[in-house]
Image 1 (cartoon, one colour):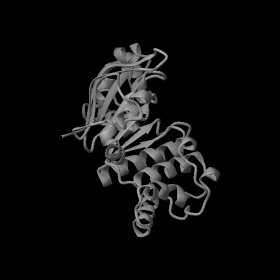
Image 2 (cartoon, helix red, strand yellow; image 1 turned 45 degrees about the vertical axis):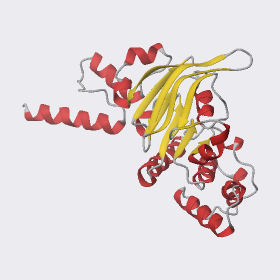
Image 3 (cartoon, helix red, strand yellow; image 1 turned 180 degrees about the vertical axis):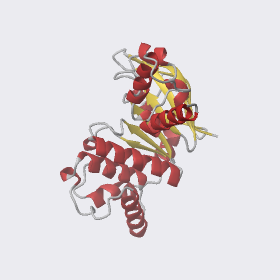
Image 4 (tube, one colour; image 1 turned 30 degrees about the vertical axis):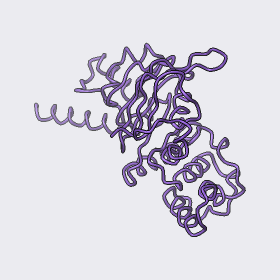
Length: 282
């Protein structure tokens, strides 16, 4: 069963701006899905429809078969955890422990449950020892992990993240990507994230939707989507840097790739295989 289904969804803002047009999306439990598009493509609007922050002008949004409407919002929002692009938009408590516990307390859960869930979320996100620190004095990467922990404590079935690696240094971005992958593989939580950072997508997504001007232009497994170079470029996107380098090497006749490598690991493997074949042919 699909965890989220959007059928012929359109949305227009009160000022007349058309943000989404006839969008069809389905996401299965356990998947890692990227919504890839340039700034202003409609990614953030799309995500606000997932948990009822916005309602479509036309079409339907369903979570596990339930329509995302007033009667089901509490249940839907428990299943779908939203993590904002800027953690400062999400954090407001004076300590990390209070931040993580807030949502649980708001649900009326008892003290023991809150303590256990908070301790679990701290452990999962690598924040043990941060309990009494102010979230506002932490680094960008640490703030992202606190925001993530506050959502994980609610034990959602899906995490929806807006630009999860944005504004982080390379090490911080790598840590967040590793953490999200471990959450998906270890806890079975579905990941859906919006980004315009094409280099992060092959590291974090099995499947991709490309959105441009509020319309889904391309979708499929990650490798298949990035194989359609001209279409990506037509929608103001580029190849991952590794794939672009491979493209240049092929154009210059330096080597051939059976399929475009999207990560350093894939490129290394392909180059080593070519070197081995050349050695064997001597």
